[in-house]
Length: 214
Length: 85
Length: 248
Image (tube, rainbow over all chains, first blue to last red; front, side, top):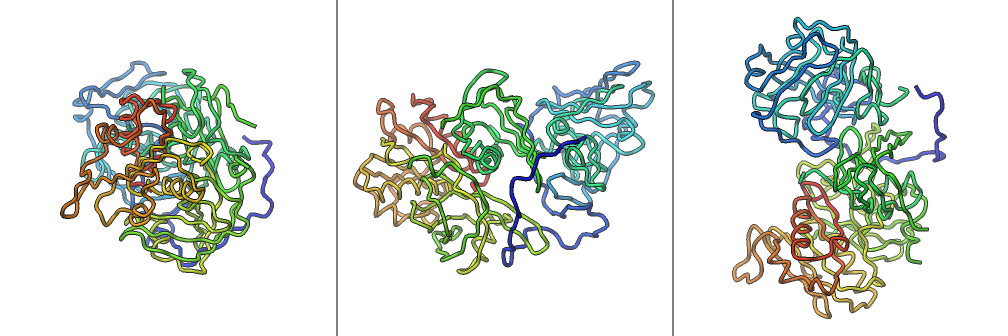
């Protein structure tokens, strides 16, 4: 929590309107689906904190580790054999774009944690390439989160996080790790990559929790 | 090689806003591997925020989270910054 | 005075459009008047900021195309069909319009006549823009520094600054074009992507320790830089400016 803030360096910040500039935002979105400060887009921007990962499915596996009675592991074929569902959700990126009605296929975290005994209250998503992001465990259970491997009916491409990524649509999209390889359940919270570097620890787009101190 | 990757030149303006001088010619030493490069030559990725990475070991040198009112830098990946006067 | 153009407080300032010039079917040069422009060095760029009526803001960076010339500044912009900013700049802007820009920024990817040479410039598509600023700065200074440009374009019609490059070539400025997708009838120049063999023919010898600048889409720059290292050029004298996947 920021008790101290730096002083603004600029005096009055004036920018002016550029005649006729609109950008490429969609104007037909239902405004009640767009969180504050966001704009609707038809594109699917590709953003990444590091190089695109390319993990072949024969070297991929997914783990549940940490504060669990028994760690779990699925190889790719085993993961594909799990009950999956098609999910259509709106996604919201902290860089201000929102994309409505995105269609995915994947496995609910509830399925992955079915029967797991834990006293953990937090979960860390960890990915190939080293990216991490943290959440309360209750934010990935109860039908709120999935590990997805298809987008728009086709295998998830590497630039969008394939072979598999997290999907946690009720939070800003940096909380949905690309190239995810596992979840680590913990009794203590542990800020991930962006949470350590200035973004909000929780990240609720409806309360516009973008940065530290929001 | 990542086609989306840029280099430190791409954030010259943003860094100059913070440091009040050009930083693309500043030489940074990577805390992880010890390699030294001008900031203009390091790899630049655009995610939720900007990540400048060491071209030798890929470790994050600097991350930049900017809003309308603030810029937050993480510099822990840079052991030293060497600038000319 | 060297270095003063790269220091100092950056502020967003208004730039007024003076002229819009078609260079190729997809690129235009926009000529601005920027009051109190502090001057710049060839290779530097500006950040451009556009604000819509509802407050939506988009920012992009564009290399400065012109040699320093008082308060006059030229940017050459390639129109990306799915772009957010470039179609506005190339299709919408008219003389009298104003945009915000800040700069000049970037002191790393810079050539000044006092540096001397020889100089190798390797440009892909719109990556030629900052290299053209270097060529124009050299001409404006009356410099006879040996400078060689290897410029990759898709076709003859898409060569930016084609006629001006033709006029300036000679007097130790050599221009070699490679056309990667289509070539005019009777074309005797290169007709493939830049590779080590082409660089080996065009570039000054490694023993001459040239200053080397490569600019364009990221894959283009990576290929050129790696080839130069393979050919024995000093990696510390290779400067790169990556424009991202689409070149700008």
